Every structure is written in C-alpha cells, then in structure tokens.
Image (cartoon, rainbow, N blue to C red):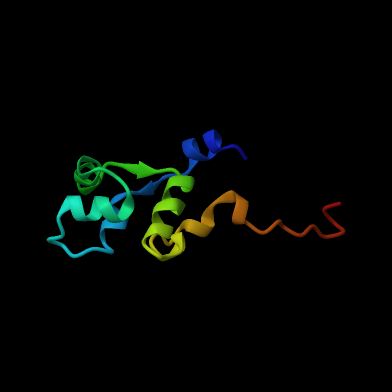
Amino acid sequence: MTRKKLTNRWCFPAAALLESFGEGEWASNIGAVLGVSRTRVQQWRKGTTNLDPYTADKLAIKLGKHPSQIWTNWFDLPEYQQPQETTNEQQ
C-alpha cells in the first residue's frame, strides 16, 4: 500500500503526542523535542490535526515510544492485520 493511500485512510490525532508532556509545557520546548515549529504545536493543541502513519511513527520514535503506546489503534492498520485462514469449504 502506498503512502498516499494510507494517508487518505488512516489518521492519528496529533494532540495525542502532547499527552507525553506536562500540561503547561511551552510549545517551543515541545517543538524542540519533536523537531517541529512552535506554531505547529499550537495547531495540534486545537485538536483538529491528524498525522499519517509515517509521520506519527517518526514523532513517536523521537519521544522514545512505539506509536502503539500513543495511539491504541496503531495495529488496526491493514499492513498489520493477520491474513484470514481459509477452510476447505471456502476454497
């Protein structure tokens, strides 16, 4: 599956990243840790920004976490789904 297709189908709320920081943490400090601008962090605080799986993974790693520790639906991505077994009746 290509990045473009995944981006259209799966989004992870950017605001979930902010839960790893204290409530009063400055946006500039959060941005420095994550490698993004202060303005971007302020946009995330509004709760309307979603991340594609590739960006979400990259940012989670910068926090020293696996993305599934931030987004509980991480393993719902199609690439992580186990193939369904077929029975003789279905073949």
